[in-house]
Image 1 (tube, rainbow, N blue to C red):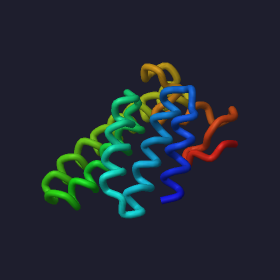
Image 2 (cartoon, helix red, strand yellow):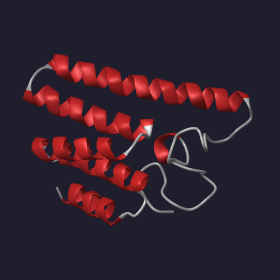
Image 3 (cartoon, one colour):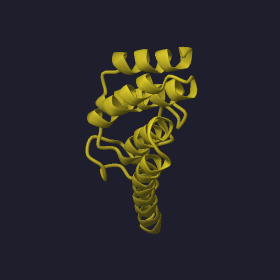
Image 4 (cartoon, rainbow, N blue to C red):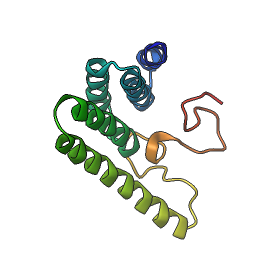
Length: 134
């Protein structure tokens, strides 16, 4: 639960909307991992409301699916998992297209994000793909 609380607090202190959404989505997953399904669902819904970034949305939707599996049925989980997988597929398609064009990132492709998944240019500072500050 401490991990969820730390990500949640970091998200609330983040001025950047996408960074806030990413951290709250991670707080949601950590809450689920700690057995706090209600908290996980609430945080996932909040993360979804904050972002259009498909990577962050896929993470939050996946967590919602895990919560729904516990609460209701495998069918609800499967539907949400398929939705999350479709977002990831779309991201991978964009990366493949960018690679064919010789681009290293997807900067400017998604509104209000630096790159798919919000990871930005790997040569700059910021967070790595695990959320750790470099």
